[in-house]
Length: 424
Image 1 (tube, one colour):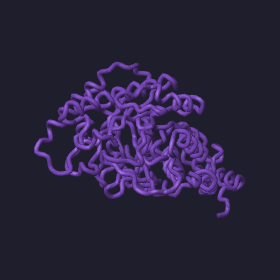
Image 2: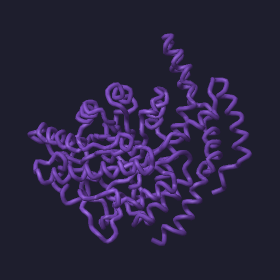
Image 3: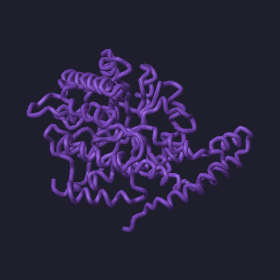
Image 4: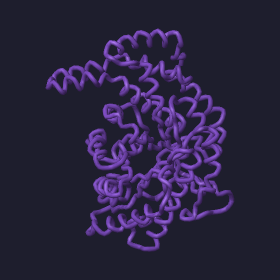
């Protein structure tokens, strides 16, 4: 494949696009800066198929599944960090890195998940500080013997429920240690797989137990400047097709009552739903949102994010409301059937591209037509904006960020696969 990026051609195309956008009241230089300044929390688990470092050979239990066996999966922390750094070199803009408790590095000692401490993530924190890549966190309620019943925080067994409460408390303390280390809050997101494969007779009791468990977890005081607590719903999962304890309605109510962040995952709703419409409604009642960018496909909620209409709609909604101070953006997908670094790169670049496009929208013209009741004009402008020379501005953003333009990054990924991944 011939190189796509040509500096002179990129600059020429950008100079023409700049004039077009300026005529619509948009400063493209400012749009580029705004787009690269939004931090994207990149999901560590794409690099190893959510296997972690507990000695497992693959993901098991908990209503999620990584499919495929593409060669080159990261097998330890050093390989995962190296792969992530290589992916970072292909992706423009500010980045964060999102961990699960599965990725604790405990050496030769086996440590129970409810006994994990910040010291088991000291290598991650040192790497974070050295690379200036803030960390986010998630307790891991899956791939464990105590998930076999399908219930964790909502379990009817007090011993099982107690274990997972202790695990979640330990996870919050680790996240707070991240926040102290990086001098900005770590987002700690709670998602559980609890639910029933077939229709339950009692839908209330598990939700009451979940509420009590969450209350106990959040009752542990931590410095607010170190941690942002979030809760995440799901529509269904493997083994929870008929009933999910932590539904959207449950967590929306809980987040509003406790004034914590609500996570909206693009893949955790009915295929005909879009989370873009939920943002303005939820923000009237909760202090902030954690946005998980993913791609639902049939039963699987975790395909690699792409530059889709759904993703673009969400980014436009965030920008139109100017609410980035109340939003945390993260990726959540895992595809074991393709090159994992390519998956990271495709997903993150697609999201960054959509953010740029949203900052380039002449929103003021749409609002002017809307407020005047000229809805035909609003619709016509929305259609006209679709053919603006956006790609020229995207190429300029990549050029300024010193990352490959267009598909040129594929050459580097292929070389890395040959030189590093194929030898694992």
